[in-house]
Image 1 (cartoon, rainbow, N blue to C red):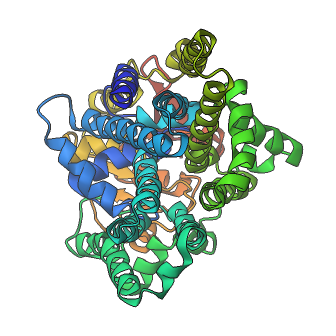
Image 2: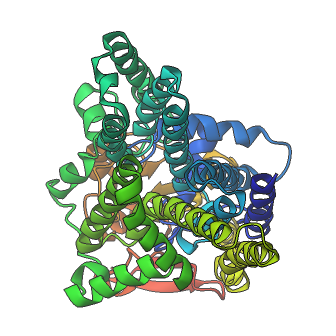
Image 3: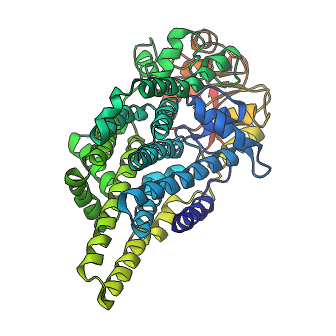
Length: 518
């Protein structure tokens, strides 16, 4: 019952702060959101690593009878987030043995800034957290019941999680180590092991969605996994390496990439220490050491997940990836479970301290109340910080283009809500959309609209190989008016230097007309 109350509480917060419609492209939170909203709605192929399970499952939300499709995709993130918090509670209950301790850990995780920020937008990370939490929970259930069916379920879920996010690869050695330290004899059960391998491979089946949809000419196809080589590039993340060697598409490093090591280290520390109240950080850290001596299997499982995600996030931070912190979310989940374990041990100790006395009851009630209050201490601030209920930035960009751009014009944009406008809403399909600006992976047919052609063909026809956008503007100017939808990849001075007048359209700095002086 307490777990249900926690889930309902965070659900109310998530829905209350949920983005109401299509989102704008913007760093660091919504770099991918407008593309995901369009891709989920039309069953497209996303950026690396494709996210096929997320695409198919979240597409079901688009059939809900309320809100626009973009809102329904946002809502899916909230639903996955609530489910993840509930599963964290159930796992924490097995670790801590106390409902209050489990609720405190689940609340702390659900209200952490990194997780909350992803639960109110179209993103993939709450679904990732749900899969990770389910795997941990079923491993703990298997340990308690020693029923091989739970291990088989974990094998399937680990395979399924790898179709969603590569961070889940950490679960393979972590789960194997957990099983080894719990009961190494399991590995000698040949039939069980073979079934586990089979179910793991079965969990990978959603990957077939990617080449199938590409061969079906999906309306939005960011990586074209229609050949074995491009499929491998997509699902392994190799598209990032392929882009870095693509002629003419070298991008300037971000300001984060250029920051000095001390600044990056401070930023990482701020994110690590800023998710939970200090008291819970202390409890979780002490509990981690406690688990090393009392529950080595769980300590290895949670530790591998925590430190693996931390290393991954640090690498991305060093590379200048602006949303590096989302890769630490599974680590925050693991730490939330440590908090539950620590608080559960504290409650047991307090109960033994003065057993059978009035003081014992008062102490336990006071500790329980404190455990539930501490995670809630920053809710008001967090609500304001993550409230996107009035975020109509993406809608404003669509309306700026739909209402002000001349018929048949070319619009330069970058991973913007314009894909949603033409593909989902079916508006302004008379326009030519060109996206020549930098991405960190090898792209394919999402470069131009309405021609569903490869990046190479788009470069020849629309000048999209020039990542400044100047050549695309020149190509467009030969046919008619050219506009630029503001984004942080485009530099207005570059167009001015190239011989264009950059004329604002409307009062808000959302849209510019590029008028050639030549």
